[in-house]
Length: 342
Image (cartoon, rainbow, N blue to C red; front, side, top):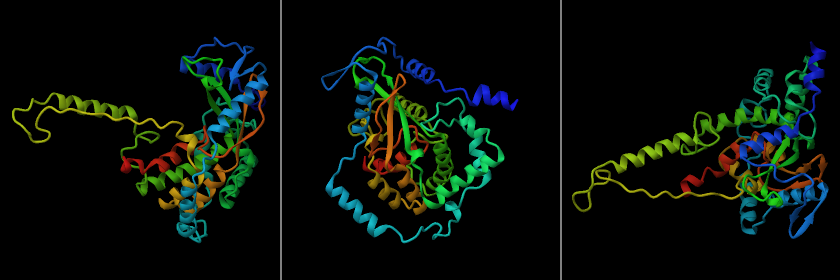
């Protein structure tokens, strides 16, 4: 049985073509652009897959570039220098409480939650490999994870990604900007992120760091619920009787509503790592968490894969990594003050 599992499941290469087809179906995209057809980028004609892959990685890396603002940089540096504690206020350097090393029970819990049949990252390790590790290999993985957490050190292999461009429905497939990137990252890194996320979520909930109005990326909440309540409130307001006198008491008669919606372009890609570090410090996130997250975000690199051809590796200087388990929660903490500001 074990040999059959290894031959038929663990060693079977992930079908990126199948992943691409599923995503295209979700987006309603068509395959009207043939693989050998030329594309255009900045007025240049791209014929080979290598040229196309290079154009894609240049576009994605440019979006996630650092945009320096001297005044904000100076303020962030001042806040970090003067407000950073000499040791973690949670554990005082003793690695206890929420900063303690992970337990075998925590690892087993997260291993059981892994989603199978997911395309692996550049390291080629799939969740099936992690789920079926033997006792010795699992102990080695456990020690590696705790060493990374204890020393706040993230291996470079965990910060690399392969990007697969997926066409966007209704856009010209000959344009590089008509594709959205799907980043395939290390599943080992995602396993570590899940362990840290479980504790970080508990801290955020206990300290009420995320506003109650925020429903996206939160357990037990959904945008549909908020929209349903909004629609019901508007309908109830419309169904109230018309005003019979001037300046009626608020809420006693039919109401009018104005809805103002904001769409933040490339919100994930423009998060500045230094400003995020200060934000987490101001929210009293334990220093052990901030230090590991800082190492996790810095010096991330990616390459584009197109029809089996790879682009050069490029550095991504800013933004939250796509495909990361931690990114949604980090973005919620980053954007938490928006509710009060708006």
